[in-house]
Image (cartoon, rainbow over all chains, first blue to last red; front, side, top):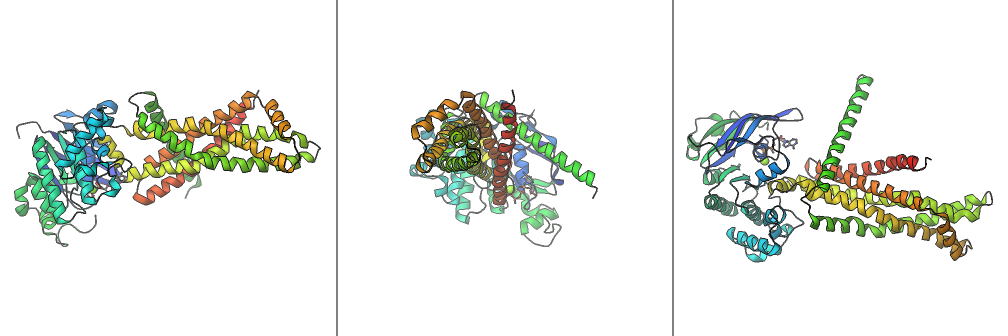
Length: 255
Length: 257
Ligand SMILES: Nc1ncnc2c1ncn2[C@@H]1O[C@H](COP(=O)(O)OP(=O)(O)OP(=O)(O)O)[C@@H](O)[C@H]1O
Ligand SMILES: [Mg+2]
């Protein structure tokens, strides 16, 4: 790798109540590349990207963005750093007290102090890009289906033209057709914005579609990493078990 | 288990919680005192916390004022001092029961609502989402609630004082043959401005505690829906205990001299 990585984790460790979740995670993503992290439930995938996005602090280890150490940023510096990020949460995490358009334009209205009508216009444009009609703008998140919520969450994540996008299980809980729609939208948006992407998924169809590379997290470490095309002949017993979905193998049903 | 060790451990635990609450409160106040501010949020919270608590606070103090009047009338009668009932009722309401009852009702209504709302936002990652959208949750969620409670509880207490004294007046004129005009005049001449102001100072402090407990427990909720339920209970219980403890401390301070 010649260019400095856009995002890099070095030796990241995290323990919750005496339970070691991350035990020295090393991970680097080159600018403009899309990395997918796979791994069993409860292996710490969400914790990993929350640490990368500055939502949690690691117990040890460092996070670098564009080669700069951002592990301990606080306050205004932290908010400025967050402006480079877009995050689509596992459950969409839309603000249920606000209508859809205010969700999408949240950063514009609250952090950038954009006038309301301008922000609304931008939100409607963003809605169109994820395939939703302008009439959705005035609905509340509670009135949307899960698939629509994910789309609105995606629109919100990309609204401020981030440099790094994080997707936490973007297709979980969707039917295969809606999942494919979301996958396509992610690929489209990442390409349009030219940004770096880190995604988490259980869903190998999705992983192959949105990832340039795939990494597998197990027992607190990255145990395999390679091009998405190599996932079927990884030569790693854990990855092979995960890909084939067998109950028997080196991974037991402990996690 | 060694009892000394058990006591030591629970003391340490309490100290740790007290420290965490103090840090949380300091961050909330700091967010209140420095820009950026989210004025839109402030207005909504003033309405939610203050205005919509009026009916319940009003009813509670009305009945309390009436009951207090009856009890003091009977008690005063034991040494032929029925006639000072209006003054004692006024003092009890304005210095003590007005602010405390308003605060306790707010603890039930508002602490719980705040803890449930913020706890649900925590459980559904909305608080994380705020941060990824460059918005400080302390500025957007916590500060407006603290401020709204500190402003509205004294205002509610003014209303509670008036309604509470009216409760006494109603009973006195309807069943105890007091003269309505004389009752009002006695009350008015008797009360000092410090009686009223000290009650309002208490109310402001209670307001801060009520909102702080709701925010703290909601913000630190974990473990899904059950965690939110637990946060709500803890918020109400801790707010109520803090109200009574703070009431005693402030009263002993205010009654010195
Ligand atoms: N805030 C927290 N407090 C305590 N424990 C936590 C916290 N966040 C995560 N954990 C624990 O860390 C472990 C990993 O959680 P994480 O959410 O990262 O898993 P995951 O790999 O994303 O799983 P899933 O695929 O089910 O989402 C879990 O055991 C979880 O209980
Ligand atoms: Mg997860």
